[in-house]
Image (tube, rainbow, N blue to C red):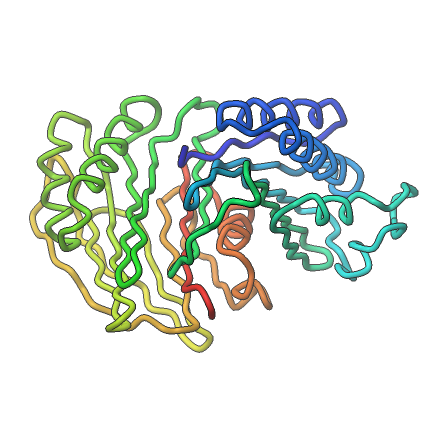
Length: 335
């Protein structure tokens, strides 16, 4: 499941809803009882923390797959008062709301991965990963990927989609945005994903061309494909339509070039452009459900966090309510 699930948290009863949704997802993924119990506690504590401190936030859930196991990502986003001292808040007994002060510390202990990003006065983002089998060997990855993919408010499915193919020497990522909203848009972006999976061994322009044929029976889509060649330290990018992509390093940002058109209907030109890939760089791709006004340098230290935390903060601060949105972030492992 590439699409995320968002649960709004504004009052205590929604904590139970977040827990029920998370456990239902865990059941579908085959989590055993012990791991389901941990997941339920983590989601409950995260949602309660939003009720106590932010009073208006969201919990975003996403299924993950790595090597021989599956997992669930829990992302908490709010525009609350923020945390002045994150380390202190993770210590048992520390509380600013008159509680026992064990919430975030318990979340960290129960999670297989945990990270927080907060700016006082601007809000907090928190991420936790729990795996169905924490003892399963996870193959070494060359690229760490995070994403938020959510439908327009009021829609059941997103017209956006994303997919990746990560290999030791070369990785490919696709973001697609089916025209419009709802099931027909989702059908178009799903066709783009299937075409990508059938042709991922080819070059980005060849994959776009194959998708153009595969999407003729759909309403069409904007899409972009990024290939990262780790040996050559080069990014090859081919895009059609309004999928934005940037490579961000510590000192500069390259905005990658797409051509106008609609894959599946009107495609006048397919051309790839090459850009340098930096050892300390990030790749950020997103649909037009995210404003292009974001700048990562306005968030001190965020680039060092997990890609899903970066995607979550950008979604929180720049998503457009009237559209589906996908934010995909990737960075090399061992930065």
